[in-house]
Length: 477
Image (cartoon, rainbow, N blue to C red):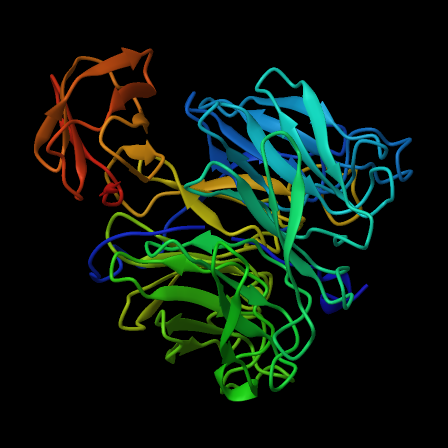
């Protein structure tokens, strides 16, 4: 089996502040979890999520119940404690969905929401809700007319509803954008028609202006994918059609920085001739659709960036490539907003790839300052021919911080603040305005947006340190 013959689909995240140089050149990757098939296999492009309880949550595309899609399994949902202990929260069986590939989000209710790529009543995928205790409810079964094969994950918008995409189906069978309520009522907002894009592989991001932004893997003016904007009412505008020189096939979701611009990746294209159709690119695009290519991979520094980017607390972006690098099995990289790229790690650095290979799920920055991600294959389990995949962590020396959920709200709105070791909290301030608060053991603060608060960073002062939020909290009128 060749490397490219086993390649798959698409992924996502959000952002922050000013650009600096990358902290350091190379860091040690620590394998946090080895999947073994029984506890899941092949996390593919599913990004991790830090829950408000301080644990990590994620999905595996396969593994679990081997009688489902035998002998591969239909996938799992897992939880990882800060110690590295993995607990299987749920195992899919086909009728309730299969192949959860878009990751999870945690709603303000505390429940988790996600999608499965296939399975369900019509074998076209599902939308589900699951509690932290593992009670799963199927909210919707896709049936082709309203889309099928939802590759990407969901987002919860400011109105409380969830939004996502399907890779196929809809009026023209080129995929859809949909809204679904917490009760499971689904509305198709847009059906792609090839000219305005086709086959969206990733989820959406809701921008500061309230509109949604996303990518399609195919279609557009050159059949190489698009970047689009969509209003909450479903009016879609194609902002950019890719062609080979500026990128091919954007699999991943966009991220928006505090500047208002968006950043993303294309799987192929660019200026390098070291890959048959280019090794992929990193780009910036304005809300008006002006695109700038920041970096063109050449295989030596990585190839085929499948996942999106995350903007860390140092202002730089970090991500992964599925191939290329020193061993041709993928990299972790950092890039400044000016386009200066640093390779942080090349995977498969030892025989058998115990550190994993194909890190297609991208990265998250946890509130302890470190990055976490998954590899699709590799690891130390022999239960899968190519290795069942891993969860890894890497530090580039960034300090702990706090994160607000949600990232915006009106005065009086309930806000949860996540962090690590939140003991001895003495004050919480929204851009300098003090707020009343309650602290729950170690990882969670609940508060409300105080009167007089303005848009800016949230600070939490403890008896030993001051923690700042990783992005500005936006106070809505």
